[in-house]
Length: 313
Length: 292
Image (cartoon, rainbow over all chains, first blue to last red; front, side, top):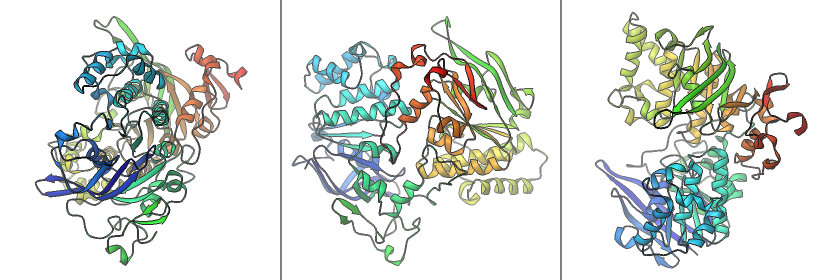
């Protein structure tokens, strides 16, 4: 078992009170597993990704633990987390351009980064990893601005996995890319897992169709909590939570035309997490909501590996 | 209604403007009233430049863009008929203006003689048309509203002017899946009332959802255009096929497009003259006859 997150609660401090961005999330991630994390804006998926590697000043943990390979991660201790970052837990940021130092050629940039972390990497290994994602070695002697968006994103992927981290967090890595580049980047991520450069991965996105192609397991989050978690095929073909179904229904696919089939969005918007109402947080927007939904739905395992938090599932 | 004829745009680049870059190369198409045309292309294909030229925000290098027979030029008269909405709704608003002031500015500029109460009723109608609750959005600052609400406010603002053509440049790419569909459905309703829309996007599935006709751009030139069903149902150009194959779909595996290294279009850098193999369906492929 690579990663175990249990009852993690991370709140944002604001003047008006705590925003409960993560409110009791538990899940496991096995070795070699890719977990796709989906949900609308503001459901807590990025907060979860950030909590696992670097909490910013406004975030604080109010409960729960994160265990990586049998060792607890000191997620709210910024200094102690430094021993884990890059070596054990690594991140691919969303905007690769702002992640690369514009005044350094790639070769120098990588060397400086490794020196700062006291690590060494064989240049041949670096080049073979670059070849793995389709980057020629000449890229090392270029400035970031001379690379295209997709190349930069792949370069950042190579850099962040240089030390073979156990857990890789990819936060919306493809959302700024064109479809063909997106496909290349997504395939490269799969390749990294298959060649053992990373042990397991959390892939955060709002694109369910893309996640389905990469992830082994998909976890749908809503308002800071888990709504449904199951193998990718099950989520897409036999979802049980009404939120997952509505999310799937609102997905336009190539070939679907307004004139033939009208897609519908989900009415309403996610609740404020400043002081969320008790009970199921989706019930205001849920077509199935009934009286029992005034109480918190427990996360139940309907089938092996299929977790759902809904009274009606 | 809107007509582009052989539109070309070159930018001067380099330190002293010594080199030139052709961003849009000899593009011609039309948008009729009540029609949605989607303009699809990857980054750098020139799709946004075309949008900006139609709105008169950038001059054309050669060719003509006409709206209802007269050339496009900046000015009140033109913007009463044509409006543009862009990708980032957060930067389209003045952060210190409340939403109602945005509408008041429209009244001052275009309808100074309309009485206040009549204007207020029209603002309310326009807001209801875009599924916004006037009480919830008026009197709020942009940062207090969500991306979907702001994008809909921009559409409402355009509706107040009773426009005929909307240039929508990636208007849904910042929104999440459910809001995205709401905005698209709204455009579809407006279309049935006679609004022409040029829908610029890199997302093929959003393009097909609405559009009657699709124009696929690559490096500034049109590679394929025609009725959406024909372009995406039976794509003739290898680039269109490649794009379609790259779109992630829920119930299908990610298939690889026809191997592109054997394709003349890739060998020759995609040059080809627009041919019309089916009525209304144009393809720029150098070897259309031998490939099929």
